[in-house]
Length: 60
Image (tube, rainbow, N blue to C red):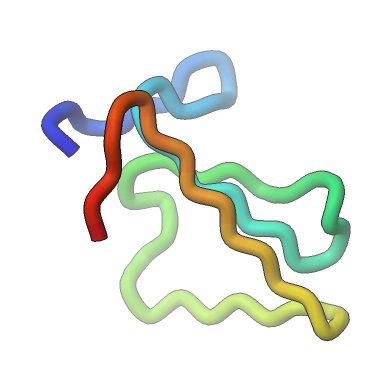
C-alpha cells in the first residue's frame, strides 16, 4: 500500500474494505483508518462477509 487511502465522493480512492453483516448484497465501506484497533463487529446472522479491494495489488 504505497499510497494512503482517502475518501472520494463517499468511496475510497485507492483501497477499501467493505463489511457486510446485515445484508449480504450491500455493506459499509471503510477507508484508511476508519476501523479503529479493537473495534468489534457482530453479524446478525451466521454470515459475515469481508471484501478487500485495492487499486493495484495487495499483500497480507
